[in-house]
Length: 145
Image (cartoon, rainbow, N blue to C red):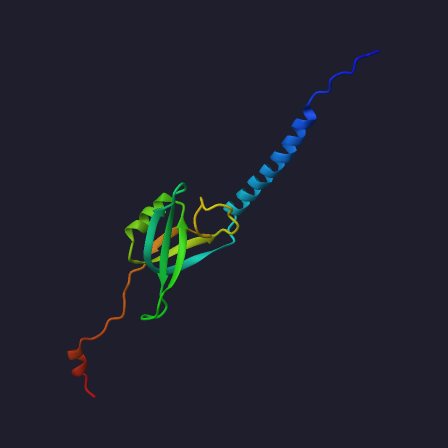
């Protein structure tokens, strides 16, 4: 009689690799897709109201743009995230000024380590604020009626 031969224990290892490896690869592919593909992109203009480096573990640059359409009307606040340190330095220098930011919207990012918002600013430029110039009261009184 022949003794039974021991089977190698590769079936358990294969099962474990399929159970862990395949979902891990699928998640990595999904993450690469949502980080590199932009759902939308565009520009927004407004006053840079708030910009800070925040977070407990994952520090991100988060900002707030006050967009006003008509003077005297409450502004609409638009929140954004900055990944690039050079753009963050530019925005820090422009606090309180009117700016135009170019952004990309990435939807479906699974963690807040990338940022608190879906809007990621990639470029910024300052707008020269001309404003409305009014005449002095004396000049208005000199205008013939």
